[in-house]
Image (tube, rainbow, N blue to C red; front, side):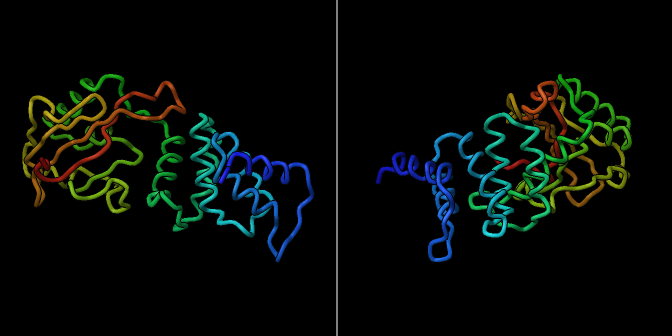
Length: 242
């Protein structure tokens, strides 16, 4: 029942002794699996994940291990390595990762955002919202499109999950602005906070004519110049749920 003491021996076996197969199973493989479960620091888990991937590619669930290695790189701030690892994970579409049901979408979002120009972001939320309002007043779908996020932009009902692949869209405003002027509240919705903001709009030529435009602060420590800026990240259809 003393995992820290056990880990010392597992680590010693892997680093100081040649591997042996016992009943067809590698001792080093078993030790590395146990070390990942007991290691307290992400730096050590990175070491063990890398060892497992390099030495036992045919025995491990490669997709799951690559994603989990990416998460560990995130924890230590190694964003370049995290993105490269997530990029290696993406081809394993559908691979289950325990505890991360949206692993594929998460990894793809990070890789796509990392590789994008991020030229739709704004330091000041009021400036971004003002530009969006001006485009709505002018009835200009092309200007409106320039202000939305070009990566991971979503459009969905309040009941959907943002990670649902059906909510990730290439959105064209033209067909929804043919019914006349689009209206909007003067101020942001009362539920807006320091990291998220909502603007109620209505008059869209669609079965659901009320949309809430969703703005959020970007969490992306990989790039300090982008981290903390604002983006128009998506749309919620219908009246806001209380």
